[in-house]
Structures are given as structure tokens and as C-alpha cells.
Image (cartoon, rainbow, N blue to C red; front, top):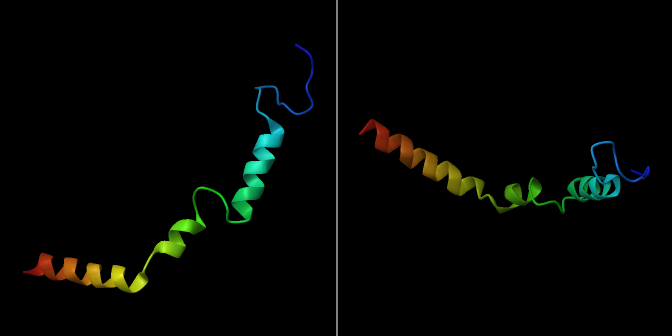
Length: 57
């Protein structure tokens, strides 16, 4: 097999990994910051309080 400078010994595409890493750093990845931006903290607190109240009764 010919040596390819863009692939590791296990066949990982180095350029693809670098691209994924840069997307993750810029917040455009599939996971991470997108969940935080969609979470309504007040709503979660309210639901937690209701859940605790239901456990006590």
C-alpha cells in the first residue's frame, strides 16, 4: 500500500478529522452548544420543583 500523508496507519482521514474538530470549536458541530442554547432554564427549574412536590405528596 502506498503511503498517503493524509491518512494514519489505521486509515483515518486526517483532513476529515481536522475539519470535524474545527467545526466543533466554532460551535457548528452536531453536539455541544446547540443543546445549551435551546434549554429554557426557568422551565427546567419549574419542572424540577413540580417533580419534587409530586414525590413528597
